[in-house]
Image 1: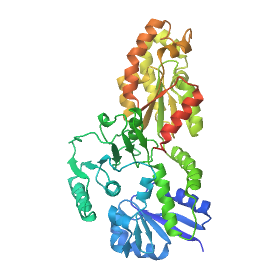
Image 2: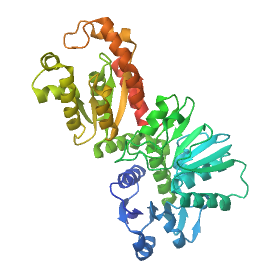
Image 3: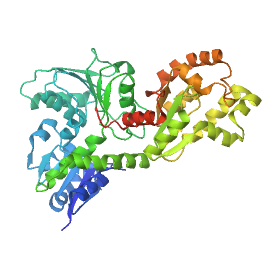
Image 4: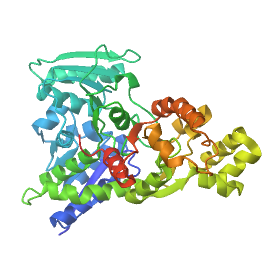
Length: 446
């Protein structure tokens, strides 16, 4: 008989859980199906008896991770410490978020930990950090009520805590630089991928960052940590690992090769993410940085659309870029560029977009980008390398003389660097640059 599993929550919307679980079961040879059950809080008492009796197991997500507590006959230790249940089997509550979180490989012992937020994810992160021997734990959040709940839970769950625990309400900021920042807020999640959960001054070399958000992969939080010399990992591996552990709980007699399953399914999940959501990756850089070539190769590797802003301008205007400059001047070109970019950013589906060299240097364009679901990847290289590539190219109206071009480069470089979410050296071969970018943006390893 086919086994039945599912996910309860509200609202559920688009979820990767069904394809993940169905793929794991297929891989492990389990005859089963996984479905979603969108159940409002008020309706849970009516549905829960049937779920417990009819399903072979189910997952619980927001807002039911605590709502299912009264219906459990027992809790495993992890669920008790986290104060949340995300997996149910035979009326026993489990929490597989911890194993998913630990799969990120973040060292917490002896570290100064900053948790952003105080909801369910913060409960799990705080419990794990304290169990692992964190040196200190600082929590910053907007909600006084949820913060009090979190602190009360910590006090009731741990008999003795050696770590120094402090808590602050925004707009108060951390007093000390943390070693590790854990995001427990929805900031940066689709469809508001432009958000950051903290101020950029916290990003320093040597910092470790974890963001459980997997949509998009990567988040701006992850990219900006890496941009400033930190280590960072996103939530896609956690999503898969917690699903594998849930299947292990529901199917205790079956052996799961976790590494083999991860290797097979993670690339599929990335492809599914990019196929399902319209996140844009904007590739910026000075003339000669390789924006078009690298963006095209990256789009091919990611199996999503490639768009070139200059090409779209030429299609729209019916004229070459250097012709527009000659006939109408740079200021008129910038107006056209902004209008076309606005249309390109509305492209249906995910895409890698190669920008023009001057595009991000206009304040209007930077504002437009930050208000959209666009992540900015900057290609940098020493001026000598770029000049060697562009010298004598008649299609580049702003690169006729070295001295003037170098002056323009020096003016634009700090704007590029400040504005981008992550920066990549484009001096090597394009294929190597693309491999580096892809490895960074997938954010699967710390």
